[in-house]
Amino acid sequence: MYSHAGKRRIRRFCKRAFWNVIMRITTLSENTAGNRPKGLLAEYGLSILLETNGRKILFDTGQKLSTVHNAALLGIDLRDLDGIVLSHGHFDHTGGLRSVLEETGEIEIIAHPDIFQKKYAKSGNSKTYIGIPYTKEELEEVGAKFRFSKGPTYIGDITVTGEVERKISFERIDKSLYVEVDGELKNDELLDDQALVIKTDKGLFVILGCAHRGMINTIEYAKKITGGDEIFGVIGGAHLVAADKIQIEETVKALKVYKILKIGISHCTGPKASARLADKFGNRFFYNNVGSVIELK
Ligand SMILES: [Fe+2]
Ligand SMILES: [Fe+2]
Image (cartoon, rainbow, N blue to C red; front, side, top):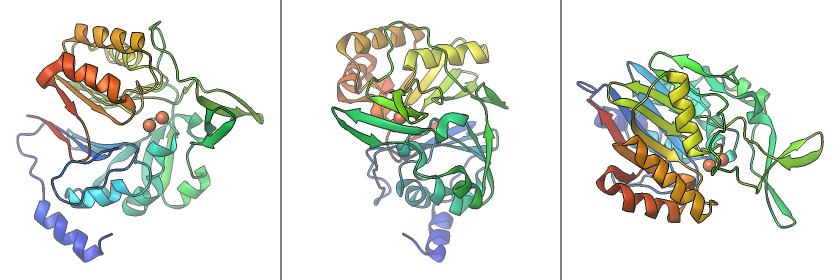
């Protein structure tokens, strides 16, 4: 970790130019890290900074340490954030929230009210807690101002989807994920799962958290609630790690129809689906990991 003086020096050194840039997206936390600058941390999870039209929104906060550490190395001052959006309650997207709040102080957080549900992953007879590792009150003490919404939230050219409609028959929710309701475990429908959508003049840019409700369901719902038609780019976790061959093939086929120009796969997409997408999308495909920067000029 860096001292405050050290962080100031890094910020001065890295001060990032924004002229001629309409939108910039920087990945601060992901399962793997790039090599520039040296010292970026990889950690299972996701956190992506969106800068557009003078707004700075942090989408997810990673699992624990990496978001604050990597932001400092990348010359990003988290005190400048205008808001935080949480894609869902899982620990690998919310565990870094406390350390981010210690940097930002009081800040608005847009999320679905179900993020505080007790969530588990089950394998055979063993279950592991994978929900948010904080109470709402703990987070409010360090500055969280929650704005809960089940429906879409519109912030200028940015849309936070809210609950994603499920209409695609080949997309299934991971059956190993559970939620505790009245002391009983039941399959988690992940109603809290949501994405960020940015309207650009090249089409919609969709940032996925884990896409537990389905990558294609999420893109279709993004089109519906924004009125957009063309898909310029998609990045983030597609949760195809547990998908069978049919779901992967149907997903690739559906994505080809959109004529996507940038597809940056992260986190829970899984090696099989990533390899298939790399093969099908050629130089439009990239691995969106820590330090990846996408700019629209
Ligand atoms: Fe995840
Ligand atoms: Fe998740």
